[in-house]
Image (tube, rainbow, N blue to C red; front, side, top):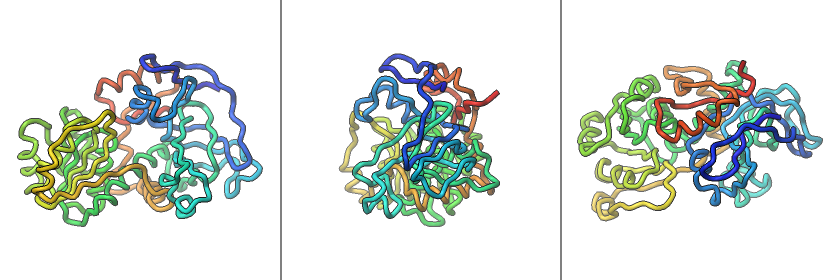
Length: 338
């Protein structure tokens, strides 16, 4: 089958062929309908060692598809089922897995495989899509779930004022959930303004350009210092910026993947009694199902996140362009796209 393949750091992905997958007893094979290119995929190709990635790996963990083969011990699924995939693969039998939270399993593995025509996953990783959700849109369930978990971790209440640093896909989806969950003000900030209209379409009430007056700008647009600030970029100094912007005894949620360390002054957080929390992955049994329901429609549509739909051929070029912060937002790879 055709796939986009990682070889080594500093070399673009290449389009090649890999063996067609066959399911183990508890697995299924999907025909990939769509797979999102995630910012963490970019990080992985720059520093693959912490992620256990080697040459020949096929990236892609935000994907959906229809089942074309079922292993002998895979239950609850059949050929033709339309599913979205939870990419955290736990052992399946520990306490965390039993409660539907494989992200906390000691054996958890973040799978890839979505940058290809077919992918193999454990049956327990699959969620059947609602009938009124397009198969390709199922690829948005994973980032939607990540963003929802950020809201849960924050303890946000209806009426709270929320600020989001970063207008990438996760930041925009945090804004979507914050508005959906009743935040009175939802302000997105970014160093560029090209996502302003998309942020508003997804539920933001305001948009600020990051800079020296970020704290003042967020306070103006929020009607006071925000109760919660979500750091959704993962760049050095932004946790510190969030701490400075949040109100006294407010909450800062670290979401962005900051590799290589950070520097910020904890004294400011101490004197303001800031609640500092972090958020990663999501709860499969609860949050993933809520995310699927959000794809069915409402006042703001997560599908507004998608800027490009491409087949496999241009993936290496598009992947490299995303490193340079283009005006693209969520790019969906659709292997069978004509």
